[in-house]
Image (cartoon, rainbow, N blue to C red):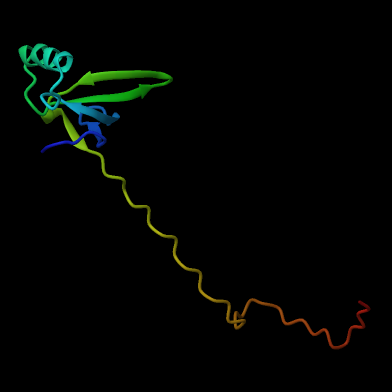
Length: 105
């Protein structure tokens, strides 16, 4: 599985939702290349996602192994069942006869 910056992913063992910021090996500037070199020495490979998430009000950032993440897919909420139209033939309804009443409006 591959990820792209901006993807929402979840950590498989905790269901923590995170946003992919960048992938190891995607940048060509010296600072990022240096960081990627350090990450590769820790076992991360090209394409490993660096993610960002919140724990309360604190923002966290970390790099993960691809095998530990999966793309988050929003589950569709079922639409509520449509109400059946009132046909006025319900046996429990009372029949009011207003013909005998004098209403002043």
